[in-house]
Length: 284
Length: 216
Image (cartoon, rainbow over all chains, first blue to last red; front, side, top):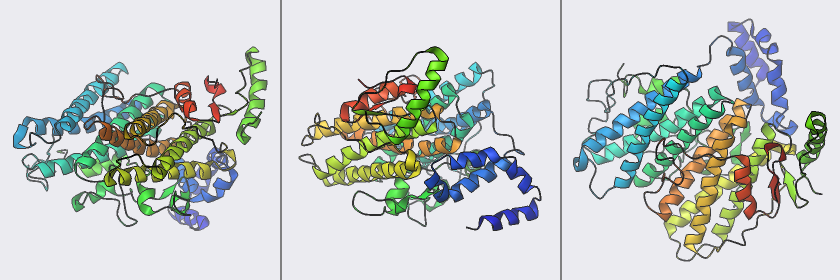
């Protein structure tokens, strides 16, 4: 990675790049404060941050209410999904199968909707109303790629897993917008943890590892190629500028990609999540 | 007295600041322990590092001396968790560099590693505590990049926690002992609450004087 080339390339499209960067000297100071050894190793990571912050000037970060309404939208989807599944009764969910799982998650997602709605109101915001959903992923046609989601138990489980794993990624992507906000950040992290518990449990039901075990080439480990996008990025092994596969493991001097990817969950931005959901599960 | 590198510097700074402020000098941590140091992101990252050291040591022991009657599925899952925790430990060590806490010496004398029930109960305690610790300390982190890394780790800890709970009692992956039945928020915990528990399994006692906790 040649930093100067990159800056030069950006300069071609944005002549003010040097000005933007120098206004952000504090960022560079922050970079070096993370241990001098790491500062060198962390350069690619740090540079990414530097650009993100330099360009953040032109786009407004979402407000706390925006973040909460986004979270509420995702909870509406999960809640609608489980409520619809449960309403089908044993026609969808076999009597002896995973009843505890579905009771728990349905309760939790409904509670999250209620909780987020209350918090938004308490903060003086207006909770968004629920959009229309197409649980088949068909954008309103009802005949999307998961057309048998409410009649076939395996499909229902697969979609549940995708929603839970994606939900974890979505919450993670918002944490930075709630920085130092003890009440809201702690609540968001606490919902994030519950979603991760759900994801773990549904993955166990599907006979998968409870954690996302990617390969170097593919983040998606669900076996459902349609949802590659939901897992894209999970194959990342660079954490804070450190390639964690180079770190020692319990049994050797390096760490496998499987362990490296499973040990760290990755985030998705709201843009990435909405791109996956709008026009498929969320009717535009 | 033995302090980690970061502890030495911050203990000095802290004493000065405290004198100026209110003459209320915090009690120094015990001679057999270390302190997280000045109130900043490195203290929180070292807090996480301490917990990851503890978890890694625990699962290394579980893998080395498996409990009687362990199934092959359980071995595979517990080995995975061991590998994740070792990597979390090694990551913090590498990322913190010179600012990293010293290696902590665990004390697992209270855990019967031959008993499935005892090992899983301890594993549940470690995982649940880990999740509540990360969730409870997130707001203390100033740099969004560090917060993101904490987020990447805590959801994996929550996945572990759910699995261990299910091994103990199927379907208990998000039960009311960890998940508020009204709001469905995972519990979160303060640094003093967490360190009090962690220190029960550490010979090297960890204090966080600047966060209101001195190990006894």
